[in-house]
Length: 382
Picture 1: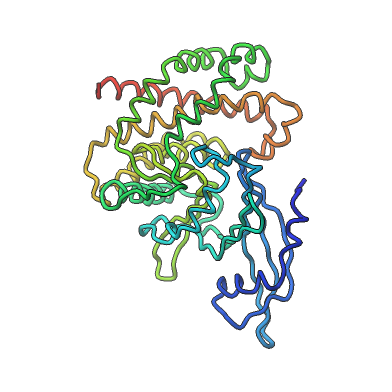
Picture 2: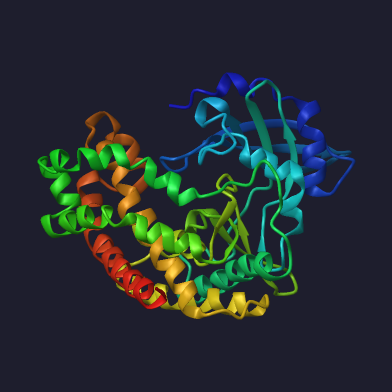
């Protein structure tokens, strides 16, 4: 249930009219009515999100409009700027103007304003996006988006200094794994539960327990890779295809709450794994997406002027994917097993939790193959 409607009572014609004028490019419009609808995201959401829509009038002309309102709050994250869940990171990114200067290909949604009505709270007013290619992308469209991500990462490797700003996060994967330590300490005990065994059959569980003890080797390797500015959560749910009237293709990335410094190739981890995890890609296509996304990302890096080894890119991707979605996701096992939290899990995945458990088995097998590949690349590099 949405607990925020009382906050939306502060919205009035005076607030909305200049925002709608920006959105529609018409300074004569006056907002006449509006309604709101909550938009629900994933389990790790750091904000409340709403679609605000209504009518505006200029003379006798009545024009429909819509905006997205994202409310970030201290209570939903951390007040610490160095924390992975720093509540104010995304509002600060939009206020900085940085997202208006992204390279061609990868762009951000238009931001009309950032308001701070009270301490510890920020309202981000954004354009509403509609995906030009619909809810399920072709593999070719994934390849194009990967090229846009590669060009974005490559730009900050070769042509532009990474911003020195309080919203830039560091060592995200290290912090992500630190949040898994307490669950790994009780992993063997949790595996006594039948549902846990569905998520982690014996062979997979044993492999993860072994690799958890070897995690520092993976972390050390990605720390030695070239570092660049990353969106860090370029999952399919955060990406929209946009086609300009002249036919130019863009990939619009939302949710910049994790933006920061990361290893080359890390961007591909969420990009490749999340469509499979959240049922936006058939499992049979996962190896094909792995190949197409990697090729597209490398092409984007090359276009930005980065001429380093493709094996370094592959090492960054495979290590980051395994650490984040293999070892890192184990931190959510107690959530999956909690009957009281089951509704949240099923809302995030759109499937019953037992189906999610079976669905994750081949994904974990794929992640273990990526871990093997990463270890081979580390051996070769060392």
